Length: 251
Image 1: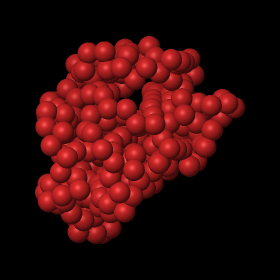
Image 2 (image 1 turned 90 degrees about the vertical axis):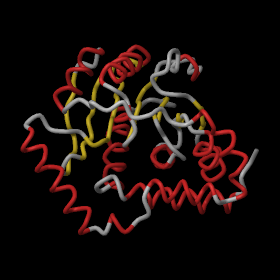
Image 3 (image 1 turned 180 degrees about the vertical axis):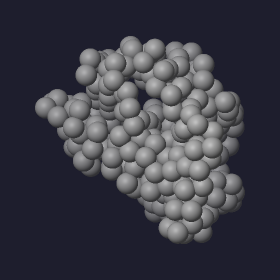
Image 4 (image 1 turned 30 degrees about the horizontal axis):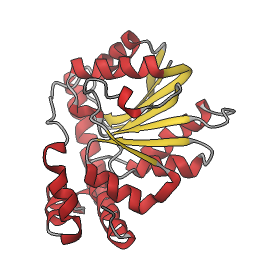
């Protein structure tokens, strides 16, 4: 089914606002991720870029605008979010429904060629450490030498007290930016459920919901170790505010 462009625009805008509640300096984080991808893929004629856990495709759309020659693929497990994005952002992106980390998930994307860059923002934290390591390994095997994985997420620091301090710094910054005035995750989904135009997709969603968060997310050094184990030679933080990080890993 298709959603009207007006309905899609309304719900994508609400999604964007809702997400600002959870990601410190979300727009700056997007810009940093796009800077990394643009720099690493410079000179590639049509770089293949994956946005993992894309939701409606806010980051993917920014990448497509920044790099119009790129083939940008938005990957998410939720059919409603993908349909909203497809109706709103149009043919600049390709959308694929897939559960990241499920057996054969990367094969199901039918990429046909090595990946130049993979990005994710506030999405991979739902994977447990073992599953995250498998996903990092899958991506390393599919990525061309010199390609990059960029992950923007809430990542705990290794020293417990300093990590708690980073969370507090992020919370105070979010308060100053009035981030907590935006609606929350539950409110967005409750509102979507009350919109009759979205009802067929919500019904289809059924068992296609995102898997539950496994917890036990690794610390910063844990992410670095998993990425190096997976085959990424160079790994490090390129941006941070509080516990919000952008990690870059070069194949």
